[in-house]
Every structure is written in C-alpha cells, then in structure tokens.
Length: 166
Image (cartoon, rainbow, N blue to C red; front, side, top):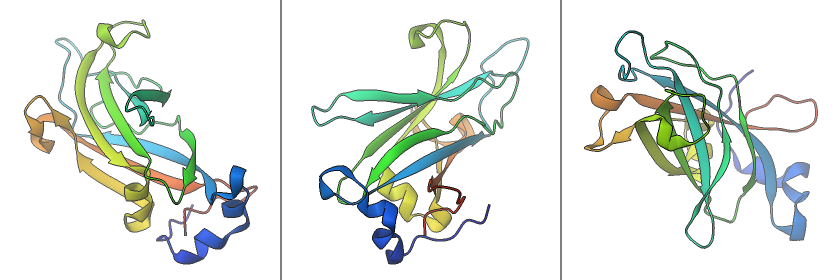
C-alpha cells in the first residue's frame, strides 16, 4: 500500500462523518514492528509480543489488543493489527508494552517486560506517512540501544480502500 501524509481533506471524508453523536471519527488499524530488541532469553532469542492499551477517562488503561508472539526474533514485524476508532477532536492516549513471552499464560506477570511507549493516536497520525518510530522506554528511561525501538503505522480502514490516512 502507498503511505501518504495526512492532510486536512481526510477530516471531511465520508467515514469521518459516520460517527456516533456527530463527532468526527474514522476507523484505523495500527501495524506494529520493533527493532533491536534486547535478548531476554538465555538459550534462544526473545519471543516478543506487544500489548496495546488506551487510557480511559478515569485514568485507567484498558487493553485494546495484543499482537501475536514471534519466536526467536529481535526485529519482529507483527501481522496482527489493532483496530480502533480515531476521534479527531479527542486526545486518545495509547500505551504499547513490549514483552518477551516466557509462558503461554495471558497474565503479563508471567512474561519478561522489555520496554514501552506512551503516545497519542493523533501523534501517530500526524507523523510523516502516519508512521511513528520511537525508542522504547525501560527502567532507565527511553534508550534505543538498551531497549530497542517500536514503529507504529496508522492506516484508515474504509471499504475496499487500503489508503493510509491522508
């Protein structure tokens, strides 16, 4: 697919006005990849997956979805995408938590935490090509050499069109 930079014309698209309550909104899918992740395993490479959450009005994080686990890979390109509504007039804070899978349990306490990124959907969409790349943050702050990096691409989902936000 071609990735085009966002433009004001997107705000006036049909899907933008098809929201509940008349608030401009569109469906987007987030594609995620990581690079240079640290190796958390002793006898093999890390088995990374990403948990994506959105901050609720009460300040709590609510999980939107998870990527698949990619075994033995420090530069994963996840095929599982996260689908969500993009409300143009609201700040939607997102959290991306990268883990190394150590057990088949869905309980994150059973996994090794690699790093995280907190950003807003507007920041991703407003980035060049609707694609944001940032260093992951760990216990000692954001540091790409120590924790790796995450890349998030936002694409508008309209019927039959694979256009990025434009």
